[in-house]
Length: 148
Image (cartoon, rainbow, N blue to C red; front, side):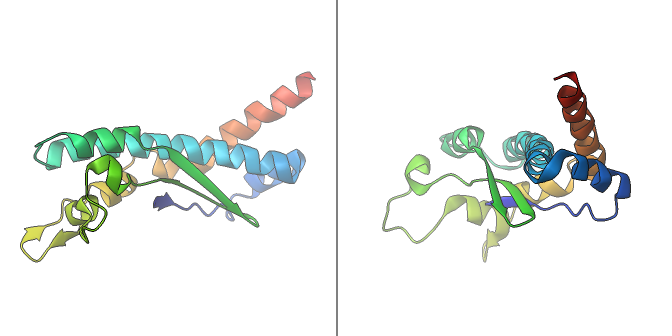
């Protein structure tokens, strides 16, 4: 899974607002913010894949378009990512040891990698705005709770 981790320890106001929401509410809001970021990274990944990889059958592009955003929580850590397509979706036989997206991303001894997955995360313009995105989500959630 291509994942994106965010460290929010430096944002004191953000952490104070998260305390007001409680543990469950805070996780929900942070997860929503990171999910939005993962969606924009997925969109960028599909664009980079289309630009950098020759289209033969179109299965790889279609498979990456259809992938879902996944969230995992463990303790206070939340990891959001795009699950890579399965072999059956790509038309790769079960016994085949090669996985086409990995070869595209990292390359082979005869083929330079295209780096469409890593670049979709590194070059995402929203990546530097994670605290602002989450702060906006917190504000919206706090306003929603005050209306009740």
